[in-house]
Amino acid sequence: MMRATIAVVDIDRLRANFRLVRRHAEPAEVLAVVKAEAYGHGLVECAEIFRQEGAAMLGVAYVQEGIQLRQAGNPLPIVVLTPPQPDEAHLYARFQLQPLACSLPVMETIAWEARRHGVRLEVHVAVDTGMRREGIEPAFALEFLQRLSELEGLQIVGLCTHFATADEPDPSFFWEQWRRFRETVQQVETAGYRIPYVHAANSAAMMRFFEARWTMVRPGIALYGYQPWDGGPRLPVQPVLQLKSRIVDIRYVRPGEGVGYHRLYRAQQETTIVTVPIGYGDGYRYSLTGRAECLIRGRRFPVVGSVCMDEIMVDVGHEPVELGEEVVLLGEQGGEAIWADEIACWLRTIPYEVLAGLSSRIPRLYVYGQDADVRHQLQGSLTGI
Ligand SMILES: Cc1ncc(COP(=O)(O)O)c(C=O)c1O
Image (cartoon, rainbow, N blue to C red; front, side, top):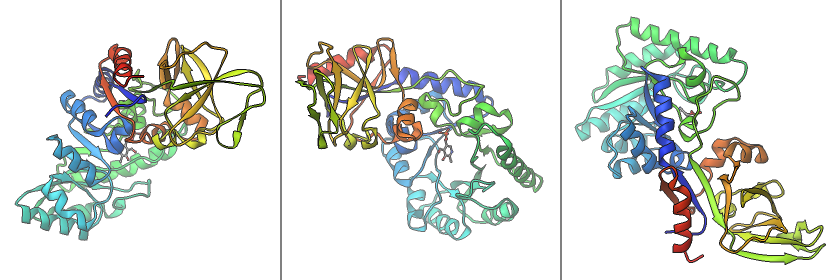
């Protein structure tokens, strides 16, 4: 299913980013975070690339995402990174998904389902060191782990936590969490448990703090090419996804004429308005109204009037553009670029939301490096634009 607006996902860059991350994290293993459609890049496709590149595990947010990966044939260990629910217990067992152990009663139900399915389910004990989102308090972690280890049908393979502030300039709370987690790991080891996967670091923690790596890291945003924080050190990862469209209509407006709903934009002088088929129904948010720019012929032009559900209008001034010309909403063209962190600034949000918010209505086109432009032209001709 194709349309004039597509998200072009550069597989070469995705691979290159993964390799940079893996080399940086060595000897720790990499759990590639692919939740939320791999931050908008395509769950199944990105997971397959990470498998080929040697990811030890995949991280999803919900059981449904894990099942999607299993149905696509991905055999990697898959960790579901939110607390499991009792009514999903049979799905963990049936699809061999690894839960975060956060509550004993729920884990008893999961263990029961594992026995019923005749499997031994690998699980990760989540410790809440300060994120206050999920997991066991450090003071009870050892006792919890002991009782969990007595449940037949389960095998504890992971001990993990999540940092709340690894991307903040002030690292003091990060170190607080780090110390709590290190103490828990030491207690567990002193009690004689050998847990193969001890993991805590998201992209920011992995890049900044050698000490946060333990035996596995859990990067997300860095794999997709964005810096997780403003300071150094940095890895030279590159953005993977570009959002491209085409001019599908052109009109000339007179000074004082209004454009779009409520005629929000008023032309100051004679100008050219072009229509581009993308809107808030695609995740190109309504709040971009009055704030966004896009690239045409390698130059920036303002998106004007309100963002509609399926279309936006762009004021290209006196540029003699033609129907079918490429418009880049996110990505590079000529020497110019607009990336998700800039769009996030316009929206006063974070690049994660910009990327993860791109809806499934936008077809994803997977290309290899320099192919990106060629394929988009080809697709333009296929759609008859
Ligand atoms: C539990 C967990 N681990 C790792 C990550 C990856 O974080 P990042 O994308 O900042 O690397 C996330 C993302 O939100 C997460 O929730």
